[in-house]
Length: 258
View: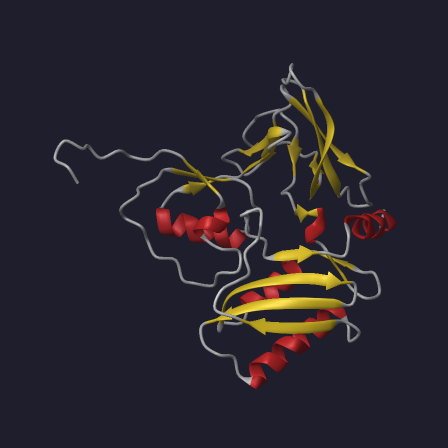
């Protein structure tokens, strides 16, 4: 480092959490001493609990979540008490066609865009409103944690809708799997891309197949594909779970639960 450079303490580090801790990573966090951040933020990808803990342990900082989209702007932020408050002064957040639990697609109306109004923009994200008061004292409306993209939800052969974390929990319990990505190619077929720390044994593969059959049913065809790296995603965002069966199919099944 040049002698005329002065150390700067980073106060805020916005980043895609998957760029720091992949959603499929099972590595033990290592404390970072060269970047003493006091606040960590995330953007572009859901923040899972284990990622939050890993980032907090590695950087020694508070980790807060922000929610928004390119066309709808920044829509919500996490306060120190853990509440996800919406920016009600500049945007209006609604839940489209909520089910019995209040879960549905998030739609945004931007109140600050004078050049190009954005009215009831469909984000493709699934979430719920949170009517409970917040301990921080703010009266801004709240939402519960964004549960994922509409196209991240998986469907069994019998039409049961599964949250993407249901398969992530299975894979995180297998130490030999360093990274993974689950893609539902068809209603009755799922491809699981695996990056193991070593070649998996037949017993380990059969055990993994069995766990997926318990979750999805015996009718689901599960293909396990081992590789040295996960296939790239055109958007650049890491998607540990992806459904390609069609948005309309998932929407219809979610609506049927309401």
